[in-house]
Length: 320
Ligand SMILES: [Zn+2]
Image (cartoon, rainbow, N blue to C red; front, side, top):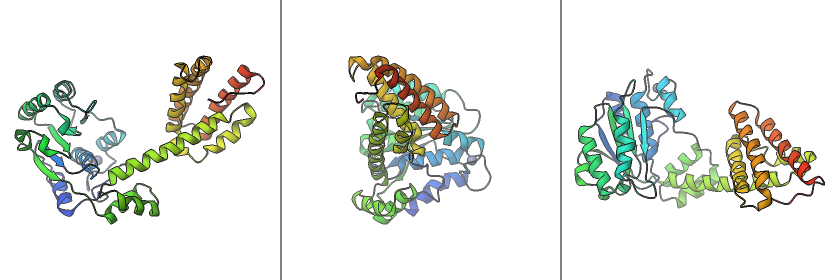
């Protein structure tokens, strides 16, 4: 699903949108914000947009998505953004110390350092107290954004230090619009919008997991159909339309290879799993180096076919 590129693409109530754009226009932001509202109403999207915009060095509308800072943000690898989220449903004091305190001590080369705390209400009491202290003492380049759907679970002393942004569920039409922008077809978008209670985020993750399930079934079916080199072209046809999901398909094969290696698919598959893993890792490298999708997959399938022919000789292959 593509990242929301600009505030004009971002769907929210007008008041909220104006509130979000105010610091961007002014070039100033208070050092702690609380984004509160139900799950899937754009809090995380808005936090990332805001962080990117406040660090954008482009001229004109921000974020420009072209300057070095924007590109770093879009690549998901920037020293100006720290994100923390619960582990096993809790954010502990160690996360505040290790992930926040240590990292904000290092001043970034330029701009502001944003700390996005996802599901901030999952901080336990110790973590909240440590955060409170951090908010009081943080360097001026640090900007905190706390996201939560349960603001009442945060200490009053934390809430009172934050500028509060209220995220509200969207109406059906707005939700459908967001889903369509994310590539969902019109009919499905309308259906999902009706049942999503104004939460496009929730609808998108449901759609995404269904898409993944279909991809999984196709990928495995392609793999299992290879009994010899003559089957490679037909196997590729099963996933020929999944060019944009090449990386995910290879992840699925890697997952299978590791299961085989651990003996979870039968003791006799351990060795085969190891060989498959080697081929998959190689395929991932090629895909990353921009080798064409079809070539990458066919080379991988030829490897698999080669192993099949060596191991079985007669081409009678047991299913994965
Ligand atoms: Zn920029």
